[in-house]
Length: 323
Image (cartoon, rainbow, N blue to C red; front, side, top):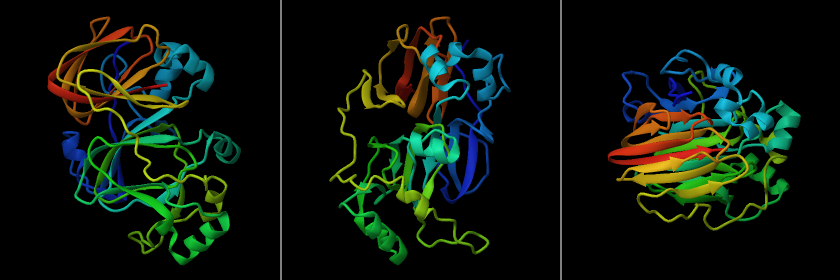
């Protein structure tokens, strides 16, 4: 197998902006692109291979064809033919809804789906851009319902001013929202289940408000999830991987490189995804397969990859994630 690139799946949204298309160097004229799904096995939005002999195959077809060779023995035993991660770029021109995701147990029971634990890496932030993550004070389910009803729910949430490089881990059960002006990379479990709690009373082009899931969300919310700052602190160093999130669903590191580095994956039983958030580089694997990567591009290294050499073009910033 060889490093896989995929065709981006662009999603136009009520709140989408104009950053994704130039960031990804695409020749497109779509407006209000809120998301680019980079690696997806979500039903109806399956990624299609863009390079090499398997060009044109979908990600689920690839898992079916290559099994452990693509995802790793442990992942294949755990997830079967379901690819476990979804990778996105998100551009919020307007505030996204305040929402929460169910954990594995609730998602399985209600939707026969994975839950949705996720993380954000801030690529760019307009002046005043914020992310909402968790509660600023503890509230009860009763107070939650009252505040949603009277429009004051946002007052009890923790709002964080952001800058590029900020990392937030958002476990299932944490109430959250992406604010206007935030441009992030999102790594999450393969799930499209979102309980929308509050949507700023917005109406769509047909004059309708979007459906809210206030009642469903009650069982998903962790009401004790209170902190002063939900940001993930990490040391920002160059030319070595810095692990920022390690959870049962994915492990993610930041690579800020100006020098060549070789990554040894011989002991890792998983695929590896690299998301390029700045600059450009070449990746050369142990079988001499070579792929270029620039800002806005994502590549999937199959689990059979033993090692990969990253050669920056001057400098490159990458997110590396695996299960």
